[in-house]
Length: 451
Image 1 (cartoon, rainbow, N blue to C red):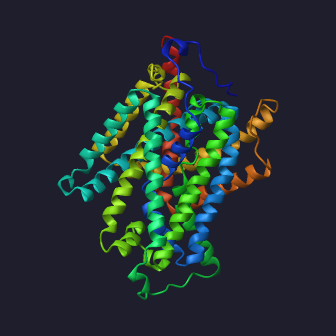
Image 2: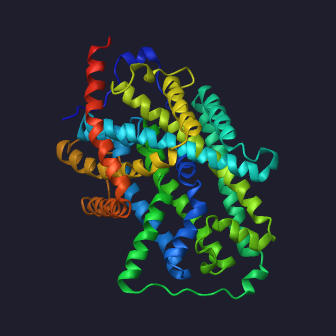
Image 3: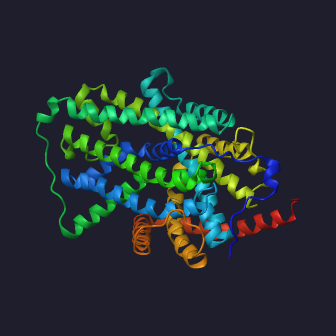
């Protein structure tokens, strides 16, 4: 059984993460990490499955409920184990080194890959805003990744400050969109649009499940603050406030945007649309909406990328501290930035951009994204049984039933995506099988290296 996570004495010689982050950063990292490119596509996917105004809005509300339920559970782990590293830290402590290794590596790779995909999308939208830049999406993506890394290299205060500023701009941008949808009338609202009937009975249930798959992906990111637990001031107080405050802020934005969309146009207008917000904006501003939404996307993506940069470096830092990756990745500069971990994460993101293939990698690693949360819920049961007297600044309301419900929801979600994407689920199993020899090799190399 894994021992408690402890900061080794060698860490004092290597520098320490600085405990300077507050509630504002917690909200910013959750909102910034959650609301990204997915918000552009998800409304069209949901409308395709459920072309009905009331059911369309209900999906966003149910997604918010699932998010709050999961946050309610993970918050206990975040306050009980206030160490940076995210899901990796919980899995290693409760389940052992190998589960921690698998979750740490897959979480790091998917974070770097997601940042790369978002960076390329940002480059494409910059080409829409500034035509001379069209066709240079990968060059722009690489340049932005490097600039964000340089900003964070200066210290955690710089990374935190930019995260809060960019997230504030994102929130204001979505507020402006919602305001415009409700207070500007569109002539296109008066045009008749063909209606589509909802499926019935079992087909309706299946359609709702498919819509919820998109919703759970879109809401993912609500746990961003747990990657920085030991850098948060008064974690027992600020982690729960950040988790619930961030989840509620995201839910408020998503539900407001969904409501605004169906206020402007019938939900059937968004069926099959890859950029539903652009469709709504075009109906308000006669063809200029796409450029306005492109600007909002750029603001939204830069906040997401900065969050990914910060989180990826904390995963490697935590794994290095536990000797599950190169020992040098736990080096921290005076500004509180794990510089080697940041450099490695930046290099991985750049490789994804240059060589491509990140969409395929993300598709395979999406299975592990669900497993991360399943491991969290199992870790709660393990810790309650193994360490019942450990201090828990926050306790899950309704335990064990709320934890069982969250676990069943995510197990069902994992089963549904395996059924829907059999090929990538097989690739994920192959990756899982290959991870054990890699883990043994890393442990052997670590045992033979000087301390």
